[in-house]
Image (cartoon, rainbow, N blue to C red; front, side, top):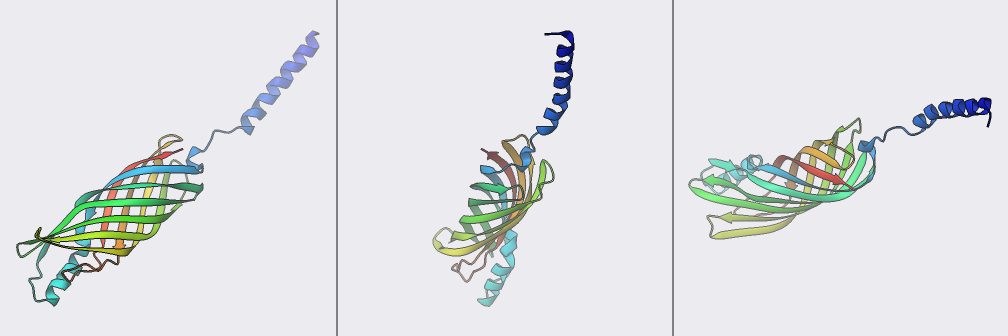
Amino acid sequence: MGPRIKLGILVLALGLVPGMAMAEPPEDYWKRTGAYTGLTGFYAFGQAFQDEVTDSLRAVGAPASTSTRGSGGLSFYGGYRYASWGAVDVSYDWVDNMTWNVAGLTFDYATHSWAVNGKFYLPMWRFQPYLNLGFGTQYADLGFTSNADSTSWGILGRPGAGFDFWINRNLVLKAEVMGFLPTNAMGFGTNNLYYMTAGGGIEYHF
């Protein structure tokens, strides 16, 4: 093979390298689709339903002064991201024990919630804000001074918002705020015990 031929092959190869690099850009992994699962820890704020409790107490002539205390909880979920801007998942949320005190009496409130959620992202970069719209069911247990209970199933709305931060193509850190809007008709004259959660967690994309 002559020197001129070798030189021509070298020039051709050097000319192809930039083209190959342009044809294979780095992966925007924060836009990729696929299945995922996650775990979130949160704090549930019981103050959201304090007005409902106060109104119920007034209706039966009881003292209307209340104090509330929130509770920790966990959320497990799994789903599928079908586009860079959208995903759908199924979630289970557990709230341990919110309480409120009325004239020395204590109410304990624990919930188990299941929902189907649609998530809508703004896929700008690794940092991605999103909105959540969920619908499902909730099982609630309302205890009164440890010797009386009222349990109920109800329909649940689960709106919320948060943001994801992609660490790499598989791991995502997240923070979110969720609202829980159940229709449960509880005993002791209390209904519509809405509450809000705030927390963070980690998500794995397969």
